[in-house]
Every structure is written in structure tokens, then in C-alpha cells.
Length: 165
Image (cartoon, rainbow, N blue to C red):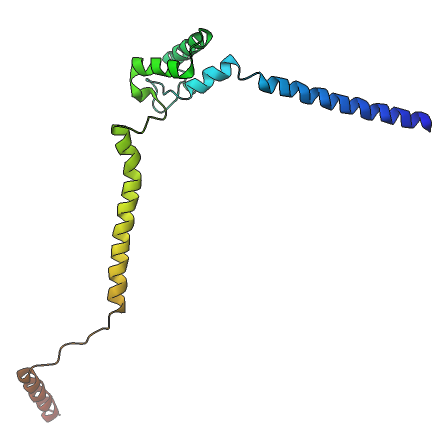
């Protein structure tokens, strides 16, 4: 029975040490930072492919996108920063190459147009609902009372109807 307990303790100690080694190993790789390919992919996701409709450089399979990824890789290996690489591609293709254009100039108009349209729509809806509610709450007025001449004609028409019976 004692030998079985010793084996159990050794098994638990071995399992605990394996978990510890795995945790330390994962921690070491987590602090190593992103790989070169991870960096290339991250930058490529920020750039739109100039020849593909609606695809980033990372998602595109075009020859130009492959060349752009190779250029990103080359510049990262040369020690350039993300901002320098993106600046290079903006210089080559203009700000249209950015997947998320900055909110300034014409882009600012586009960024502000949706909230402005929602605000204007809400104001129009409020005015419409307010006028409809006011009309619904107003007492319903009947027709105006007849003038003296109209009252006489109505009375005459009613007498004629009674005489005809």
C-alpha cells in the first residue's frame, strides 16, 4: 500500500512540474513578441489592395498584393517602423490605400455625414410625431353653424319633404 502512495505522489509531482514547465514556456514565447510574419500580416491588413475591390493586401491574392507584402517584409527586416512603412505606401498610392482612412478633409465629411443624417432624421421624425399628436388631441369641431339664409333654406327643404309624404 505504501508503494502505491509513493507512486501517486511521484505522479502528482511529475504532472505539476510538467504544467509548470508548460506555463513558463508559454510565458517565454508570449513575451518574445510577434513574429516577422505576424507584423507583415498586421500591416498588410491596414492597407487596401489598389487593384482588388474591397480587399486588404493581407486578403488579396493578386500579384501586386504579393509584391506589397514582400516590400513590407523587406522594410521590417531593414528596421523600419509600422508608421514609416505605411507612409511609404501612402506616398506611392495616396491615402486611398488605407483600410481605415483618417477622419480629416473629405474623409471627415464622410465620417460626420452619418451622425448628421441620423440627427436630422430624428428631428424630422420628432416634428412629424409632435404635429400628429397635437392634431389627434385637438377636439374635433363639427361643421360651423349655418347662417340665417342657410337655416331658412334647410327649414324650407324639410317642410317640403314633410308635405310630400
